[in-house]
Each structure stands twice: as structure tokens, then as C-alpha cells.
Amino acid sequence: MTRDYRQLRDPNAEYTMRDLSSEAMGVTDSRGARDVEITDIQTTMVDGNFPWTLVRVYTDAGVVGTGEAYWGAGVPELIDRMTPFIVGENPLDVDRLYEHLVQKMSGEGSVEGVTVTAISGIEVALHDLAGTLLDVPAYQLLGGKYRDEVRVYCDCHTEQEADPAACADEAERVVDELGYDALKFDLDVPSGLEKDRANRHLRPGEIRHKEAIVREVTERVKDRADVAFDCHWTFSKNSADRLADALEEYDVWWLEDPVPPENLDVQAAVTEATTTPIAAGENRYRVTEHRRLLEQQAVDIVAPDMPKVGGMRETRTIADVANQYYVPVAMHNVSSPVATMASAHVGAAIPNALAVEFHSYELDWWSDLVNESVIEDGYVTVSEEPGLGVTLDMDAVAEHMVEGETLFDEG
Ligand SMILES: [Mg+2]
Image (spheres, rainbow, N blue to C red):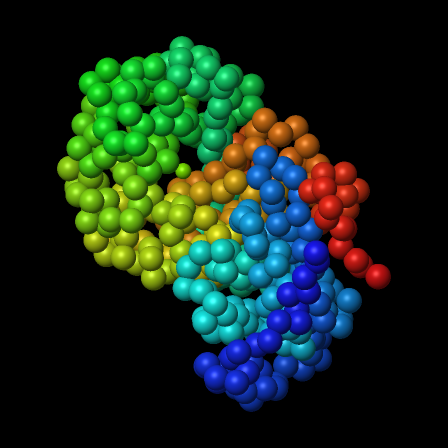
């Protein structure tokens, strides 16, 4: 059964929440080339190593904005649900439209979660659209440039993920053959010594096994690459402390998500107890949740996912808050070239950008999805073209669409 989410009743129309539409706000003054209205929003899901949700925002000026939302069930439906709320609006009012969507969806859970993800995809497309209409690159809309190139770190995998020597071999290959000087490996890999996965406790041998992976990888690419290690919220407080302590003698770029994300007091205590840099943030939403993380000094590095956290301006604002606490930003990213370039625009425009992740080096058609080259020699050169500066290769999109999806109707 196919549901039409655009036909759902809008409860906010009856229980007036804060209505930030142009009509309610009396916003009328865009003129000339800036007199543009949104006519439609469409999505298509591409079957990458994650199901990427590509977003297209159409206008009566014939200009289209392309964006991308972080993956997740329900994202295309939520975008359909929200489309009527901004059809007829001027796409240049990016910030107001973002807040308008948050308000419109507030009764349906827009404080965090998948609704914020869906809004993020629209917000990225609005930046592409606004930049194109104003003939400026998207980073200009965020305040201009700190840097021409944004460093990319490569998330690495090997089939022998628990073999320290195999991890070191892969690190060396990615540095030598693919040209990255920044890497990340998973550290929540089985050692064979686990007794009980549910209790989060690391036995001494498990700590030594993880330490061996870190030692072999960091020693192999020492002086040639920074290496981070990801724990995916796996360990108990005490196990995280012992692991971080054991890694202090190695030059770890950062240790990511050693403890579960819900308890900020524990997160802060783990970070406080070690000189190993601790990173977290990819499963937190909007500025509010990152503000708490930063106020409690619970991270040494903050890791928002731009097309999930609220979009380009929200990530810029998170970076501003992080900067108040002298914390750098390493953007989590598992997206297609569209959101990767959009994250790089944010990285260009914030002082404290450390890097943007690349999570698809095993996918040989990743770069085919757009006509432009996005990552070269471990960096994104931020586009100087209007908007995001990437154009979808519709043949590649069609070739890699999730089964049952239809291509954008550009007619
Ligand atoms: Mg992670």
C-alpha cells in the first residue's frame, strides 16, 4: 500500500503553534531574481553502502536545489509530509524555513531523531538553491572561508578486522595507495576473549588486544597519518577508562564513543580521566544536545553528522559553541558526494574544522554519482561554483537506486 504523506492533516493549522510561514510573518520583500517560490520537493534513495536519501527542491524559477539527508527509515516519508509546509515559500529564507519546519513538526517529534534528519536534507538543498540563485558558493552563505581545502579522514576496514597486523597493512595501503593522511579504524572488534557481550565489561586480554591493534596501526603509519579509533558506544565506564588509559602512550588522534551516549555525566568523567582525546556527537541532534556535551566538557573533539544533526547552519552553530570551549569539529559522514561536499562547505566556513569523514572507499562508484570530483588526495577542495557545486549524474543515480524507487520527475 502506498500512502500519500502530503495529504495528512496538519494539526498545527488548528492548534496554532508558532507559525513562521511568510504569510504569518508578513515576509514579502524579495524582489527581482530573488522573487522565487518553492514548487515541490522530491526524494530518491540510492543503494550505497548506506541508503542515501537524495533531496531535490524545485522552484518556479527553473532552478533546482540538491541536498541529502542521513540514511534512515521514514526519511523520504517525512520529507513528503513536510513538503506542503514550504511550497510557495521563498527558498532564500533558509533559516526561517528551517525553523518553520521544526515548528510545524514539533508535535510529531522534531526536537531530535529522524524528523531532524529529514529537515536536514531539505536544509542542505536550500543552501544549494540559495547559493545558485545568488550566484555564490554555499560556504559564502555561512560566513565565508577559513580554508580552501577540508581534510578528509578515511574510515578503514579489513576482512581480518581483529588482526592487528592486517589492520596495519590496510592502514599502510590507504596511506600509500589512496593518499590519505588521516584514518579511522573500528576498535569494537571481537578478540575471541569475550565472555558476555551484554555487560559491556572488557577483560584484561581484550584491552591488550585493542592496544595491539592501536600499537601496530599507529607505529606503521607514524609521522604519515593521524589515526582515530571508534568504539561505537560499546563499553562500561570502567572498561572505557582502562582502555583510554592503556592507549595514552600511543599517538591516537582520538578515541570515539567508548561509552553509551545517554549519560552525559559518565561521558564527561571518561573524558576527564584520560589524556587520550575523546570524541563523540554523531548520534546527537541539533545545537541543544551538542551544547550540553560541550558545556559539560564531555568531549575533546565534537563529531556532529551534518545531514543528520540539523543541516549546514546547525552544524555551523554547533561549531561556534564548540569554539567557545576550544573544541575542534570532526564531522561524522557516511553520505554520498552530495552531503560530503556540503559538509566540506561547512568545514571551510568554521574556524575549528578538523576533518570530514569518508566512509565509502570500498564502493568503487561513489564518485560516479556527481559530475565533479569531490575527494582528491585526502582532501575536498571546496567548490567555487554557485551552491554546493555538485551536479547529480542522473544515469548513475538511476543505475544505483534502491529497488522500487523512482527517479526524480524533472518534467
Ligand atoms: Mg563513529
